[in-house]
Length: 238
Image 1 (cartoon, rainbow, N blue to C red):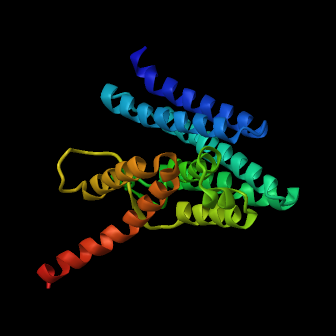
Image 2: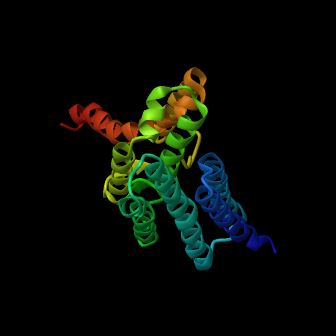
Image 3: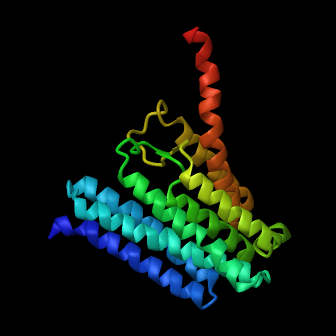
């Protein structure tokens, strides 16, 4: 019975994705976002439970990807659809742009499943990070008084460019750090600790408005930290 716990958590993740999609169809982007975030917690928990219980299986790996396509691909795609439609874009272009998110997510997960080298870091943005980027914009527009976020969420051009940007990041063969800590030591976890510190600082200062900033910080740290680290080590290697 214990060995079924990880797969049960994965199925609950899928249910959250389904609920998020239904909420988005009904026009409730905020509730859809909450279900996506609940799915993120479950997505982390199923992997943690599998490691803790030593309950790895090929079925669990495939099931995890199927659940992630729903929660982090289809559901955020539905939110993008809503934002574009609310901005006045006609239905066919809305569908075409919104479909980019689930399509890129499915391809990203298929690549991940066939690449054993993505344990401590990713090649391309992970689908939960892409989904949270969409969620962050939707929630910041709904629950803050910041006009910038209202303008961003209400602009079909911005949302379209965001969808394309996230698709490129998911499929880009570039390293982006994972939030999984192999140990609590500073060495080897520098990016993670910097990201956590920056995120907490942004949340304290800006609260809900910090969500898009946190995702921007994640992307910047992923790309800039290896460059800075390389510059620090290059004199010693010469």
